[in-house]
Image (cartoon, rainbow, N blue to C red; front, side, top):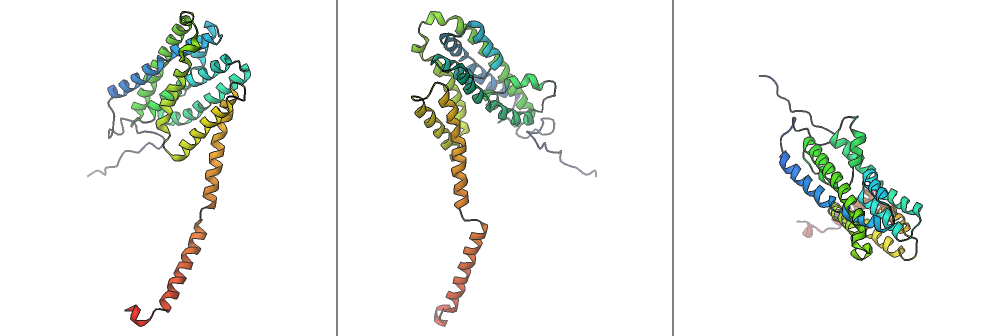
Length: 277
């Protein structure tokens, strides 16, 4: 009888569907989930178009931001800071640092998707919160690629179309600030971020960042509080590192155990025969 061996497991991502069918998700289910996310978030591009036009950007500038930048939180941060009278360089810096998170998404997705080298520069444009949220939970590489592609394509097309419609219709809405549409993008971002905050450290970091941003908002120029809220991460890491340093290490635990053993021996030595039976 020929020896049977299990197929090798992929070390950098979900196993390919040809190698393993255990836990596979139907393609139709992946497409349905991806379309749901892409359509729901893509419609908020209308809010960005209205907000951007209301902050003084031209139709061409507004559409160029959605076509080339294509990261909603950064776009809203930029036009929000400009609308509040912030320095353009400060506004651009805040938007840039918000967009840096996509680089970390890309490091993870590149392993999961394993796309051909020629395709990667084009796929990098779609590395955003929504595509990452849909791609990461997929059980197979095939499902991950389908989820990433469908989410990215749906969201990119809808976001740019609704940006155009929003920018064109900004004049019909009148005072755009009264509608509160600038909150639509951040609200969608928080809705995707909240389920990812699973550990206590992550929740504390997010809460501290919010407190920093809100506390500094009245006293600093627009755009600066967003930048300084990033200090929450090193502060929490420093505090958690100190807690680990003050915890008893292996040597202290061993010494404490030895002391306990000595105490037990001493107690046994002083035990009377009646107590020992």
